[in-house]
Image (cartoon, rainbow, N blue to C red; front, side, top):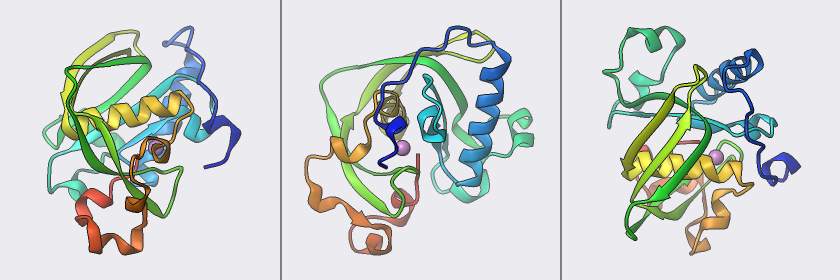
Length: 186
Ligand code: NI
């Protein structure tokens, strides 16, 4: 938090299939796994391009299902949402309903806070193969996409908070939030 690239809107990627985009995605994936994150946006590795990636583990399997390169080819049973790369993503809310949830961000270490997000969204984007992904999402899946796409607009989750009294140090997590919720970083 505070690095200029995290404040700037990201640039669209002209050619999603370019080798440098593939290298960026590999680098981001490694960074996400090493940091035990569940999502990452390119500005978080100081690259101002419109690229995000994320996955959603099945509930209660966070530990076992942290993705490794080999597992990507193995199958997708460990994931509620398999590791997904979105280049030039767009999303829109489905309905007005919002819900509060705890968020942690790899760019805001040591803190978590409650953030309102749309409960259901539709999103689309391109893969590094140039294929289009279009999905509907709800709950945490919808939340992680909104969080990552915010990074592409130069917005960090504290800016979305409506009650800063829920911004707490991770050491204090037990007092207010479940550990599973509070351990997610993206
Ligand atoms: Ni983040």
